[in-house]
Image 1 (cartoon, one colour):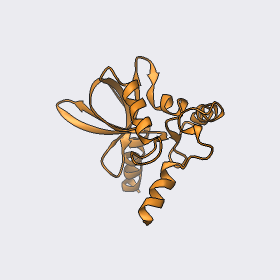
Image 2 (cartoon, helix red, strand yellow; image 1 turned 90 degrees about the vertical axis):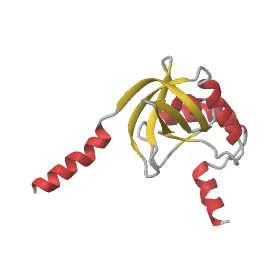
Image 3 (cartoon, rainbow, N blue to C red; image 1 turned 180 degrees about the vertical axis):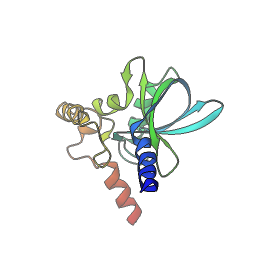
Length: 156
């Protein structure tokens, strides 16, 4: 029983505690939901949580990447890391000068709320407003979410 309790404690502690690291130098902006940053002389891949941006070869993929580059044009970012995904990327929320960058991507219409992984349901309000105002990818009447795009591409 102690072994099970210890396992559960260790397992859930990874989800309960976030690490906040500030003023990281950006190495590369991969796409609209992934960046590489320097931390203690190492490069870390950070996957933005709560959102899913268009793939690079998908409509609005380049626009999404360019908008994230614009938001992070100073080359620095603060990151709240909440875990690691199955690909070894850090899962994080980006901030810069008081702005929630993940939320900004949705608000500007350059990312969807990632239905399967969203924990902050208030992101849906930002998405609804962007949709209503036909911002970014919402200029299209029925844009394809990245998770459907990836699924369709994997079948081909």
